[in-house]
Length: 120
Ligand code: HEC
Image 1 (tube, helix red, strand yellow):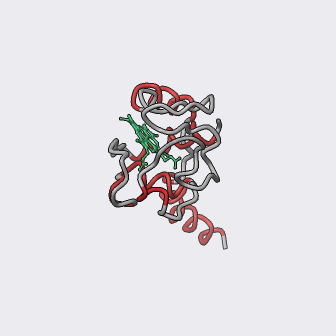
Image 2 (cartoon, protein in one colour):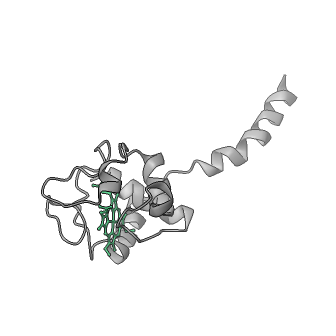
């Protein structure tokens, strides 16, 4: 019994390590450097990109007053952590023809940015 639980711990430890939550504070920093030139997140203001205020659970391509690509508008995506992770890793791979070209290739950076966006 005891041995079995030790074995279980050893087996699950790497999986647990991968599920570490993103750090919203680091995410804010990354967001300010890589995203604020085109996106506001603390107000419903669109600029070169749509506002990302209230992004989690929002239907893709639905910020009022922003002219999206039809690709994003017709994607049928609702923004969840998983969808954002895929979009930020490679927007064009998830939504062919989207006008957002910025990629965040680093897994940890994406997690941090998503944690920050989710906290807004
Ligand atoms: C050079 C300008 C630019 C930068 C920098 C940029 N984006 Fe975008 N982003 C856009 C544009 C334009 C769109 C709309 C794409 C479309 O219509 O296909 C968009 C769309 C998005 C969407 C979908 C929003 C919605 O309403 O469905 C998300 C999420 C997003 N960007 C996140 C980010 C994040 C996070 C960063 C920083 C890592 C970032 N973007 C950096 C221009 C930018």
